[in-house]
Amino acid sequence: MTTADGQQCALSTGDVIKLVAAPPDDSITADLIVVSSRKADCPAGLTVSVPLESLQEMQNNFRAQLDSGLQTLHAQQGKSGLPGAPMSAIAPPPRPADEPPADNENVQALLDAQQQQANQTETSVTQSAFASPQQQ
Image 1: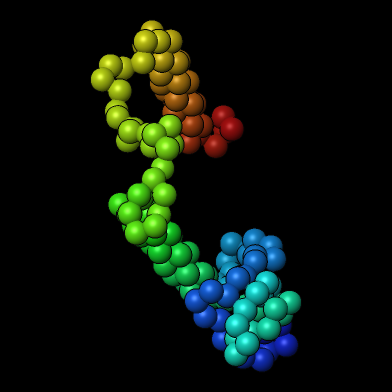
Image 2: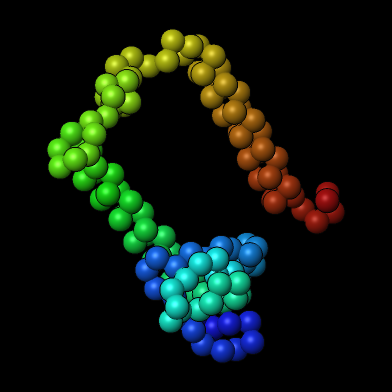
């Protein structure tokens, strides 16, 4: 990583970084503060510039490890010294609704109103786009 003063340092698995502020839309890097790190890595308190691609990769790897750990914990509950989860904490997976929402009439009315408004806007834009310069 590159520090605010242009120096190079490393980050590795287990280091904790915190976003300072959202980067501008056209930026390819983000500024982050090192919150916690290993001895050989960027020291805590240092501001580093990290490419957005690297941040996305870090996030994806972290999410994959978290998901894997949760799956392992779920599969191993009650075994190898891990306590079993209480039944109240184990929810069945969500199922799609067998029937559409009961309030179909209001949904259809809202969709019809939005379609009518979209048609009016389209007509208005078309008329002004093709109007002669004298009428504008």
